[in-house]
Image (tube, rainbow, N blue to C red; front, side, top):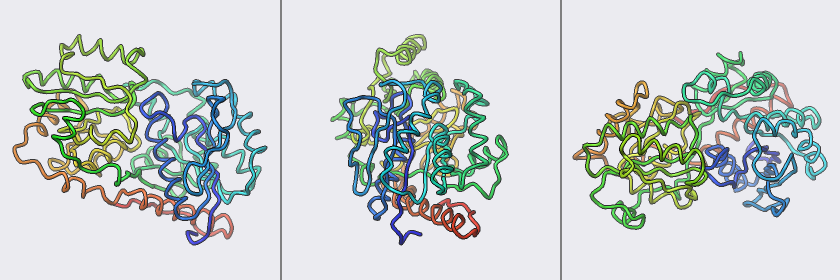
Length: 414
């Protein structure tokens, strides 16, 4: 189907693809939606991304990229809304969607369970196929230590979506297994399309220059964290790992992300750094725009992904593309994208002690691999390749929908 110009309604209701990364509810999914749409638009497909209006000063329609529009529709109050509270306003969002729709779409691609619910309504009303992507799985979050528990409403709807969409997508084989185990999803209905990385933006920069630009010392060992300040991200156990490495006089933990230094989440982490006696070795940078992240990756000796759960782990790709090794817990795609001892290390059980051991390995290596060698291991994860994999999925869905042929198979790009 790639030769045809597709018209795609993409739903990302609770999280805008141009939202402030690193803040609450805005993370890897927003990057995924934005970069996928941009690449599809380059190829001549027409993408309308529908998201919730959070500020009345926002234009309803924004031309985001070539052939890509971002469309804001009303649902509930302006500003941030709790996701569970937002559920009660999905009817309003769907009504605005129906009133707005000035195109007939070939398919619907929804992201996250709230969007999936609206996507199912549109599927029934518009009589077009609906592709739903799980970016995380509620049932897995509820079985994971360090996670804020997800409401029963979410898991019930996810289970329904797993059995009532034209196609469901996940980013890893591990997530595919989770859907089968927790929601009884049929294996043949699940496609696997990985995350991607912007290889033009994330590339090796000179380490000394990057450190000078950011105000870091040349003789420090820099350990980096990039992400939201959520319990699931495991920042507390990363900080405990750094406490095990107090003998390293020049060790610095640089934490990028969060909604600001005055938020409860940030205050709690700052308090923890004092309790652990590492406050002088921790730098809270705050939120950094994605375009400004590359110097942080290049300045670091290692990125750490200490999460309790990730559906993929997008920041690991960004670090590797920048030539920086990654120490990670056994989450998402870490076991498949890291070459142990070369480009990173996967910690067996996520303990702070084992995290510390992994970090120590990568800040004390006398002969680390070159940045270009590390980068070469993730070149296959270009957004162009991800878009091609997604178009294969779309094509199979449309053939199945129109002609009743088989719609199955995974795309691993491995």
